[in-house]
Image (cartoon, rainbow, N blue to C red; front, top):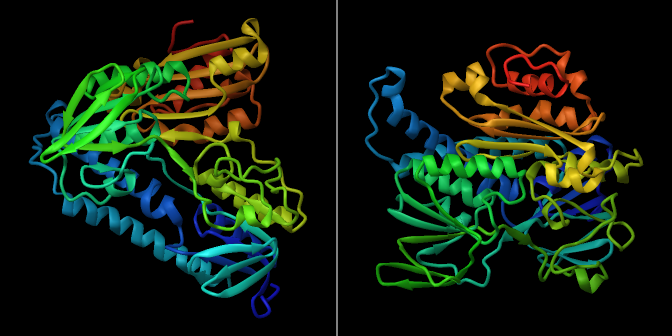
Length: 460
């Protein structure tokens, strides 16, 4: 591996989250010297304030539901309440173990970690605490921050960051935003015993997903008594001595104890010197070409900073891609539509590829075929007591271009779905593979059998 001579490296990476650290790890494997600059903790939002802690909370929520529902399965379990101190201890323990592991990986890789706030001062130099670090290439990996829609965060109005460190369960909570973050926290808090209402400006919950999943999730949330109002925006949020009043644009008001602003995440690029050095910045985002190069030669951008899906695993893929691109390996381009997406509410949503409306727009109404396999016919889903669906979308007489799934634990099934879409499998290709019985994975095989014209446990 080439050594960084003084403060000169092959690659200087600004940001140690998913995109930045993945780039660093792959680059040192390829013999490059790397400086990785991070102002907070290696692992970034995903590990410390995002994916990992939220999924830990969702697992605690699942355990709470199982304790409540034990009798249905012949188990005399009782639910006595939520101990948030212990929930947080469990969640923090998961983070700490993963964080230690990541630190070990970074250290053993021989990566120079620079702690502090970095600023791009020229196309090949980042300054941190008065020190300059120069790289033949620079990778911008500064990620994203919670959007707030201009609302003042504090007191009873919080973002997901504050929601992850709460010491008690709110009695009543309003969540502004019915996409991934909103429905995940709605699911957690409902399981923990809160009265939850989601406000979503677009016509459905999870509006970026296939309509079959949006409708199915709304049905499941109604059954769970999670309240939601779609197609209406909020007008104002006012804190009082003992609560918050949320006023909607239609004039309705909701009194609540807490408001979670969960309207997605925006780019984290302000004050980092990008524009001064000539990097194109569009409303905070750093646009790139398909090979993740910015408009400034030698400067790349990865992860949430680049317009598109905001997913940790997209960051990993981007980071690996850029390391290999710099090393001259000519890697395959990362395409957003081929990236699997999971929303970990109960029931879970998992999808990869394009939705039915997108397919109809792309191929024409007469050139799209779909099938929906209801989990009512899936043995393992019946054992678990979950309802849901697996929907396949294909180009007529062509490959499967979208897989859309809803049901408990279906995030774990997105791997095969990803292979189907990215290897451009035909239903007949998937149908010939034997899926183990009884598994939830079998539902993918059943859907493929149906789409291939030879259904087994489903109606044609």
